Every structure is written in structure tokens, then in C-alpha cells.
Length: 263
Image (cartoon, rainbow, N blue to C red; front, side, top):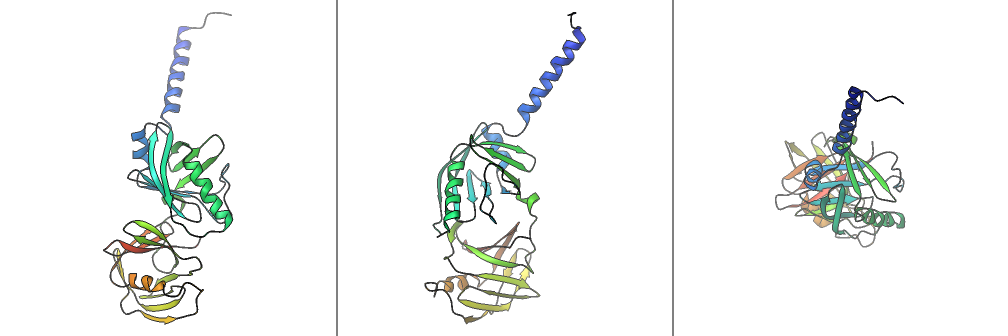
């Protein structure tokens, strides 16, 4: 076999260096890189979850903000501290709400907690976040790409969370509470009380002056809980729509969070 020309050797060496740099620069990096790349972003699972199968009709949702990660998998609202160790996601001190969930969803919550606390590798490629351990893999997409913000009006918003100074609280099991805003009016129900009245919508704010209410039969144990919900609907409320989520928040930090049905 003859000698390899020097120019060919140089070309192959340059190709090796460029390829190595491209692989090293793709996706995850240092801890500061991870915090900068993910902070303030929400990711949701879409389509085939590969090695992390989900209960039908559910999806995983992860929000990274200020050293914390909020997580959902169809049942409770979970949250924990998050740090980055190279290409590893380090999630600790996970807690959450204590809603009563069907066995499949409760198990899915536990599986997600175990996955996140298993120091999964992370890799970000544009709007796609891939988390993987030795036994599972979860692919998520930035919410802004997966699901553009819904309009505030003309959508039936279902209440799923009570907000208290940024902390999520559970809605009682069986409470079918919702509201819908349209044509200058709001209609809805707390599950025990039907309400309607005018709705004044301005940039970033909504007010429901003069709501009329009518009590209706509701599930045992829910009587009275909705008084707090109706109280939260009085006065100016700041509006934030993110994907299929609506948050209505009072100036004192208390509020309500709703979800819209799938498109």
C-alpha cells in the first residue's frame, strides 16, 4: 500500500476536527448553558413518547424557571429544584399537590418523579428537548411551537388549579368548574353554582362586574367550596394565556388556572 499524500491526510484531519466540534456543540453543555437554554421555557410531550409511554389523553409538561422545574403528567402539579451537571439534569426536593387520581395517573406521576430524579441526560436541539436515562427516554417540544396560545374568548376554560402567591393548589375531585368569555359576557359554573354576567376585557386584564349566581345540585362534599372561587372572580384580574392554559390572578397573588380542551 502506497504512502498517503500529505494533502489528503490534512483534509481527513480537518474533517475529524470539524465533526468532533459539531458533535460536542450540539444540545447540552455546561450547567450555566443548561440554565440559560431552558430557563423561562415550557416543554410538552407530543406524539410518540418512545420509551416513556403515557396514559391515553395525557402528556408531560415541564416548565423551567429560576432554578426550579414544574412538572405535570395528567394528575398532580409537581415542582422541585433543578440544576445542571454537564449533560445531566439534577432534580431534587420534589413535592406537589395531593389530588385523588385514578390509579393509572397516580402511577404515572410517580414514574415521572423517578425519571426526573434519575439524573437524566438532556439535549436541546432547537425547540426539541430530549431527556434520557438508561431505561427511559422522553422527547418534548417547546410549547410555543407545539401549541400556540389560545384566544381568551370563545373557549371553554376548565378550572384545574387554585393559585396562592405562585403556589398551585388542588381543585376538589369531582368539581366540574369552567368559564367561557365571549361577546362582552361570561358564563360558567363552579360545579355547585352557575354564574353569568358582563365581562370587561382590556389589555392584560379582565373584570366581571355584577355576576348573577344560581345554586345547582353538586357532588357531596363540594357544598361551600365554590364560595372562594366566586370571591376570586370579583375585582380586576390579570390575564395570562400560555398555550392551552389560562391564569386569572388578583393583585394579592391569589387566582385561578384553567385549561382548554385539545384542538
